[in-house]
Length: 383
Length: 248
Image: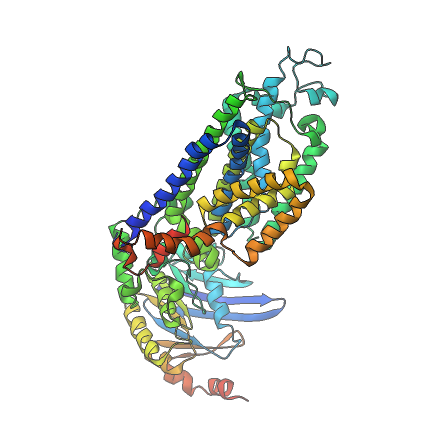
């Protein structure tokens, strides 16, 4: 393409970064880490789905959602409902007053499986629901807010309120949702025991593979004209509107896409951790997810993955040694990101390591000789 | 009164009231095909509000705006744009984080739906259109430049280019030469002359020299109403206009 002379060399650089991540997830971690740690990494990676979604809708589109935990949770609950039904066969629950329904329903004097639990007997329905339930909710919120031009801080506050509402709803409807304990004691997926180390390793690879696929999907979206429209909307919403675009429909789309990614992450979380509870839905986890994305770099898809990994690893490390200090460390980290390195790890990498890397690879391409174009520089922003 | 079919744009009895204050009050305005009309008037006369009303940014309290036989007052902003109305804002509003090329490409009128944007391909047609417009707006050498690195004048041109690539029938420009150097003003006047060969243009401008250079007809607004209309010489000689401009 004549407009971006150095695009081809940068494309390969982008691919290189992607391959590094793929190698890290699929080779380095499985080789270096024991089954327990690998399972932990797998759990962190489920948050990376949310962070990638946030790069799309917050970093590129400028829509800050403080309620991504809602979509993560819905995806997770959909999967948990399927697993719970499988674990509640009439034989396994013979001692209950109503055999064949989940144990917490029995404890809460529910005598019949509620209608919205019925379809979760089907695995294919569950897989669709994992994506579609978050998407439908995001669509309703998106249409209601964006068509009315609600944006910025107001939108963030409303998503936060929705996170709070959903948590309260789940806790309040104990007989249908398992309440504050969540849906626990999940055992098998289509007869395959998900609790053993071997199963967890397989699930780790499934998670890594899906995450890499989602990153590629997100990269494809950002590489299309839609990606540029998102950036344009963030810069000058009115100009986009008065260029003939229905701005609201683009916002709804990217918000739904982020919700779908979060839902997939949530479902994989349930599979790997073996339960789902409201503590992954509410305000605090939702804000934590924004922090993962901010630390990694909200303009960078891969940065978001590293952000989710690093912050979660730090969280585990801290909580193991100083459990009560973690929240303060998290707060300090967020302030540091906002004040000192607003583009996160990806930004730091570009600023300090990229020049070094260029020096080393200096003779490789003539790209270094041509002054960097804006297009080139932007591509570098998404390593 | 002739029918509105003779005019590309006919505004009749347009009124907008903000909490009782009538920023535009019973205003009527008729534009012929390929006419260059300049709206002048003191600050607060309601000039920008008129453009806002036509392009749908502000909703009219009363009145009608007919454009090529369509009633605009009830259409959504993006539908008004798609019907052929292009609007340039007073402050250059361009996409700072995109290149000049991408600014123009995003404005290219294809793939305007979500799915359309996902499927959009940068084919020869797009490249040709972008290069042609870039040539017209003197930015052919800056295509790969990030838009926020352009000078103020270049940003104004870029926004005009972003409208041109949409091939609108009516082009509305809000103070296109404000803040420009003398050389840039001259170039912009040239640019507008090229553009107006096949567009109808509605311009708001303060610079009288510039107005004289480009205007077919001038509409003078004052307190939300049309004070005078005609050639520049005509309105300059109008005692009502003199009074408004020179004080009481």
